[in-house]
Length: 233
Image 1: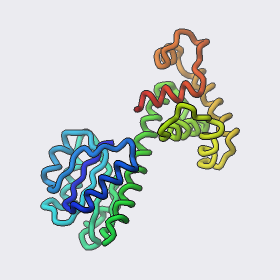
Image 2: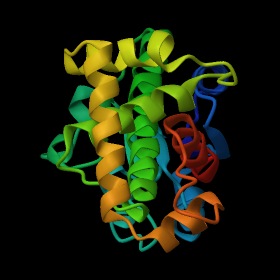
Image 3: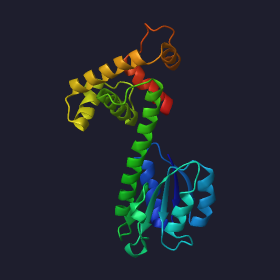
Image 4: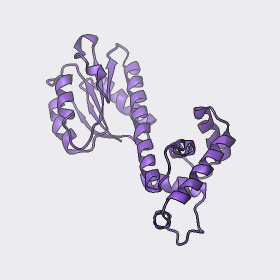
């Protein structure tokens, strides 16, 4: 996740950078600007996922920045505007992929809201990557077990150390809480989804994806999960 900061409050800038580095493993501060006009050309030439824009004392207004970013061909980044109530353009908060944080005297609260929004966006990006890998294997997304599998992969992806993860003890209860199901139901649903995948997906695709040489060597659940994680890292 590439992040651009457009911030001329040096104290807040330092807090934002520190908090992002502490809270979001996948985040990279791509560049920092005190002037919005300098950032625009860079944003348009690179794959930027998040733009954090403090609207105070900038020579480019929030609506001008938004209009330019909306014309980008390579990405549609999340834009987090830090604004006063009086400076919020009409309908700005109704646009997709736009978040507005009202400027407060407490910089820590502003940063907390920023981190929450970035974490939500990061989850969406990772889940989309997981889905793209599952599409390659012809998983059926109308099957509830596939949704259980997506969430399971994401929960393992988040772990700092997943080498000894126990699916039944560490992952399925979390997924179960998310779907209001017990861990056994989560496991059974995932197994059915994988069985359907083996029925729907061509042998050649499976062999190539998992580097196996015969259909009898079907990868087990953990192998599937860790192979997908290795693809999206």
